[in-house]
Length: 165
Image (cartoon, rainbow, N blue to C red):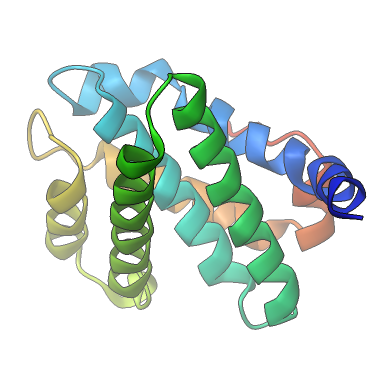
């Protein structure tokens, strides 16, 4: 039954999804790094959080599990857009764009630990309207990456993510 599967997926990944949404809502990110708080900037920051998560756990978690999480996240994003009242054609176009942006981010962060700060800042600048060339965004995500590395996959899915900034 499709409804039952969706309910199980909701219960399985909703906590982690909400954790990333909450991290994305961190007001410091928008006060310090962007000219104004836009949906595009929020989406990019959300996608960076998600991309780093997948990048960290890709070698230790089954591909099928990561694919389930990916599917769930993008379904939630689609549902959020639908709630705003947009039509199917608009949603399909935007979802294709968002998935492409996500894969672009994922490919650019692949070798993050060996990337120079200047290059990291350039990566962020491609997706986020940065107010200035601040190292704070790099430092923020480096803290996030270390947090991910120090925690288990299951604890991140079920626990509350609280980074100390």
